[in-house]
Image (cartoon, rainbow, N blue to C red; front, side):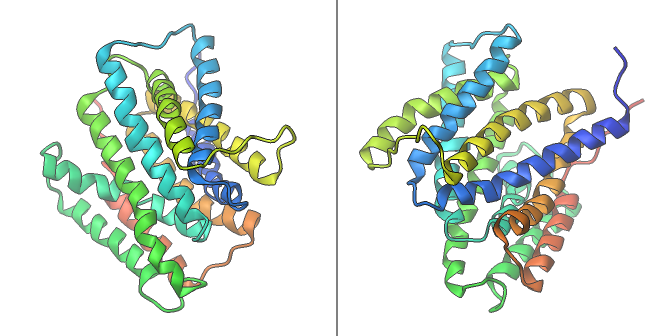
Amino acid sequence: MKTPSRLVYALILAAIGIGWGATQPLGKIAASTGHPAFGLIFWQLVVCVLVLGALTLARGKGLPLHRRALEFYVVVAFLGTLIPNYTFYYSVARLPAGIMSIVISTIPLIAFPIALALGTDRYSTRRMVGILLGLSGVLLIALPQASLPDRAMVAFLPVAMIGPLFYALENTFVAARGTDGMDPLQAMLGASIAGVVFCVPLMLLMGHWFAMPLSPGRAEWALIVSSALHALLYASFVWLASRAGSVFASQSAYFTTASGIVWAMVLLGERFSPWVWAAAGVMLCGLALVAPRQRQTA
C-alpha cells in the first residue's frame, strides 16, 4: 500500500484539530439546558463505548481484563474522564467556550513541571519559557477588567483549570505506566467502560440522572455529536501518531485551540476582547516552546 504523502498527513492533522475544537462549543450547548454534569458524562461515556466498541470489534480485537489492565482502566477513568469532565461541564456553562479552548491548551504546560517533579523529564530553558508564556496567557484572561464579558466569570477560571491538571496527570500516568500491551483504542474503550461503572452510582447519588429523549433536542444532539466526534477523532489521532509520529500528531493542539475559538464564534456567536486574542497568541507561542522537538532520523 502506498504511504500517504506529508500533505495528506498535514490535512488529517488539521481535520483532527478542527474537529476537536468543535467539541468545546458543542459541550457548552449540551450544558445549556441545565442537564447536570454526571448525567451528561454518563451519556457521553455511553456514546464513546458504542463507537469505540464497534471499532474494536471491527478490528477483531478483544478487551484485556487482567489485573493491571483493570487498574489502568480505573485510574484513567477518574483522571481522564470523571473529574475533568465534571469540572468542564460546570465551567463551560459559566464561561465562554472560546475561553475553554484556550484553557485546554495548558495541558502540556502543566504536564512538563509534573514530569520534572517526578524525574521523568529533563529541565529545558526553552520549555520553561513556554510555561511562563502559558501562565501569562491565563493572566491576560484573568486580570484585565475588560477581558471577559462579566468579571464574575473570573471566579470560575480556577475550576476550569482543574480539567487540564487532571489530563496532565493522566498523560503522566500513561507515559510512566504504559498501556500493558493494549493499543490505545482498547485502553480508551476499557477506561470508558470503567467510567460508566463508576459514573452510575455518582449520578444516582447526586440526582444527576436524566433520560435521553427519543427525539433529542439541540442540547442532546450536541452531546451525542461531541461524544462521537471525540471517540472518532481519538481513533484518527492514534492512527496518525502511529504513521507520522507522536510529535507530529501532537501539533493538532494548535488547530484545536484556534478552531475552538472560531467554532465558538460561529456556533454560539461569541466575541472576544483584544486581551483574549492576545492570551490565545501567547498561549500558542508557549505551546510551541513546550512541545518536544521532532527527533532527527538517520
